[in-house]
Image 1 (cartoon, helix red, strand yellow):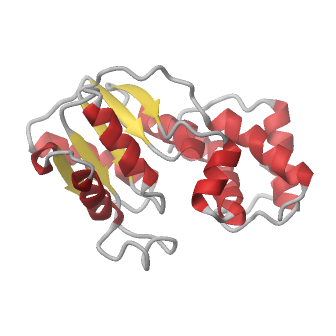
Image 2 (cartoon, rainbow, N blue to C red; image 1 turned 45 degrees about the horizontal axis):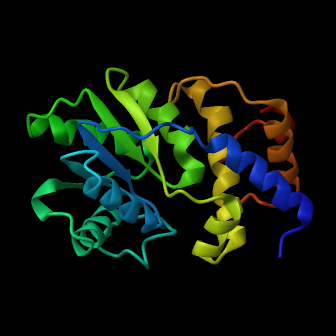
Length: 223
């Protein structure tokens, strides 16, 4: 069990990660691969709601998914969506991306190869990666109108659905760190981080939720 303070800090960072976009019909949906098959479930539900005619699932494997998704994240997502009634012909699989930047650029290349030039795209991710995904997509594919979507869950509901609160908080802290570091690397657009969110992040790092942090020469106090 994590402490009450860490729970409150995690919820603060979680709330910041949500973009609160109003979902609307788009040219295509891009489902970002991860350990969470709920992304495929959400994408399938959006398809059935008529929000897009075409889906790209993108993702290879990572240390978190190599055992549970041995055929690759995108392929497992495709299989899940087909089980949920999405026509196989409405799904493209991009099986090589290993980070969010590659998710975007490889999906763009795949769609271009198929002659698809979307004006808008639903960017479907885990809830706590909406802002990170949006910032990356805006930087790397600025001509598209991006709309973020994820499973409609609050922090407690999501932790319960995954069944591993430390994994979720580690991932959440990692997503926040990237929002703070990657704009200076040219990987994302800059976004203002509210002081209370930054403070919550630093407390979580100090409590040891560092399993998904990227190596950096800077100390936490200098980020």
